[in-house]
Length: 116
Image (tube, rainbow, N blue to C red; front, side, top):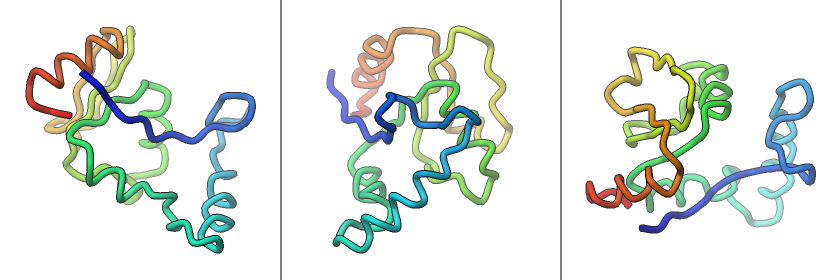
């Protein structure tokens, strides 16, 4: 099984700053758009190529905090990795699932279901 990664992180290896904010991504998007890079950083093009999204719990909770209008994943199946219990809002229950396995195990199961 294989996968593709689409992520953002700062030089310290994190996405959010010390306060949990990802506002720095807005500035990046504006800067890159002026250099011929799509304002979404290529996210829409990437999403058109994947069948399933695998993300960690902290990222999932961060995206949820943006509000329902900002959910960028549509109906794409998603697996959220966490060893702790996870509450999935009802509006996403048909597409989002929870798994405590390793990323490799989760990708292998997705591959066996025909998701790439």
